[in-house]
Image 1 (spheres, rainbow, N blue to C red):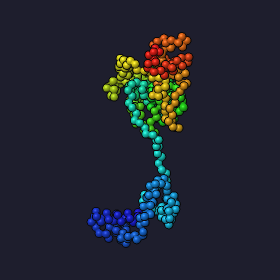
Image 2: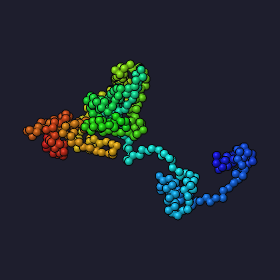
Image 3: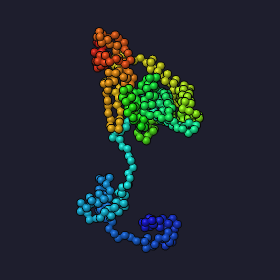
Image 4: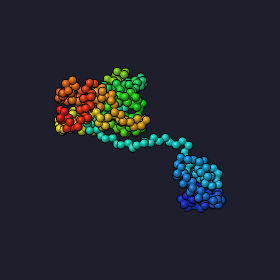
Length: 368
C-alpha cells in the first residue's frame, strides 16, 4: 500500500474513532515520520499540463511516443519520468484495448410491419433427443400476423437447407419484402444472398450481439421452448418434426395471442386479408414498375452497401417482393388483349413490358 493511501487511512481513523495521530498510526503500522512527510520535489505542473494536451490530441499514443514528442519540443526528461507522470495523470493505455464494432452509418429504427409478408424473421434454436444427440430448428415468423410459417428440424441445417425452406414457404404464402436475421454463418452465406437477389427480398441484418433487434422471433422462440421443447421427449428426428408440426398448428389456429387481441395468428391473418380485399384500390394509381428503387434489392454486406438492379430478373420474370402486375400484350399483333395478370412475364414479352412500365400515366391510358 502506498504512503499516500496510508495517510488517507490514518486521517479516516482519526475522524471516525476520535483518536490521536499516535494511536491511529500505531494501529495501522504506519510511521509517524512518514505520515508527516511532505515532498519537496518539483510537482512539474507545466510538464503535466503539456502531457495532458498531447495525450488529448494523440489518443492512441503511449508514453514512449509522447516522450519522443516532448524531447522534440526541448523538454529534458527521460522516458521513466514520462511513464510515471502518465500513470499519475491516468493517461496510461491498456495493453489490450477492447474490441469495438463501430458502424460507418447510423442504423435506423425498424418500422413495424403493416401487412402480411412485409417482414419475416428467422432464427435458429437447438435441442436434443432422448439419448443426448443434438439437433437444430429453423423458425420463421411473420412479424405482422405473428404466424409461424415454418419450423424445420434437422441434424445439420446449412445455408442450402435454409434456402430450401424459404422456397417452400414462399410458394405457400408468397415471397416477403424483408427478412430480418442475425449475423449467423447460414444467413450471411452466398446461397441465401443469391436467393434474396433473385426473389427481390431485402435481408435486414441486426446489430451484432443485439438479439433485441429481432424481438418478434425471440419472443416466439421463448414461447416455443416453454410450451413445446420443454414439454416433450423426442425419440427420433421424425418424432421431433411431427410433434413440432402439431404444436405449430395449435399455435397458429388455437392459441390466443395477447398482441393480437387474444386472437390466434391464423384468424388474425384471415381478417387482415378480408379487410385488404374489401378495400378498393384508388383509380389512377399506377402499379410499381421494375425500375422502382423501393422494390429493388439492396443489402448491407461485409464489403459495404450495394444497391443492385438485376436485368436477369426482368428477362426471367422473377418476382420483386410481390410480383408486379403485367398487361396481357400481344407482341405479334401489336394490340393489348386487356386485363391485368400477376403471373411472371415470358421472355418474348419483356421489351413490351418494360415499355409499358416506363410510360407516363397519360401514355398508359392512350395505350390501353
